[in-house]
Amino acid sequence: MTGVQTCALPIYNAGLEALSDVILARGHREPGICAFDLAQATPQMYGELAEVIRDNYGGLNHLIHAAVEFNGLMPLDQINPVDWGTGIQVNVVAVWALSMACLPMLREAKSASITMFTDLETRSNSAYWGVYGVSKAALSSLADILTSELETGPVRVLKINPGAMRTALRASAYLGEYPADVPDPAEAAEDIVRRILRD
Image (tube, rainbow, N blue to C red; front, side, top):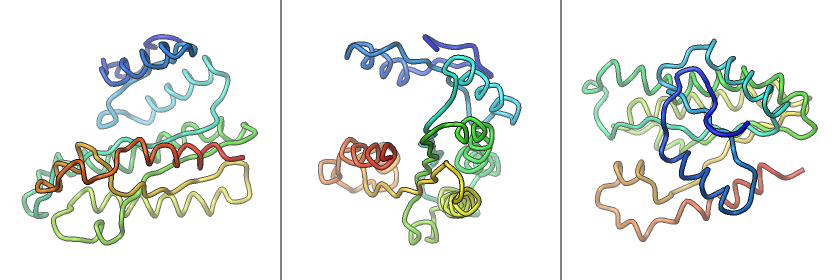
């Protein structure tokens, strides 16, 4: 799969394009890009994405769920119902839907995994973390249930809490924090990749 593929809800994503340029500059094969809005995607669209992956790559080994919706800290009674629905959709429903759409391909692979990123339980249960906290708690349960259901098969489920990282999400929640005091995401990424690729 090369270039920007025709997918459900195609959108331009500067971050993916920039990453593609880095991969090409290092001499690797041109990656495929298939971006779509997780907040609007339907089950049919996830199925279409899985078909694009199968048609262009022949299968799938690892699925990493890294998207997250966070609109800042606020009391539950101040959250817009639309924002609540979007947070649950992106942070939980999309993870389940994409995992289920890709599970048949993952089961066919020699070594396969599904990775979900969780957060501290104390944060998920604390005041003002709203839909982010609720969705992270739900995601943790989803990972546990899927782990139990897949424990005798070839697909591993990794539930990873990457810890504090210097991201835009963290900066929007910890306004008084000095960014240089927080680890670079690249440090966590190396460990995460090692855990995913272990055989």
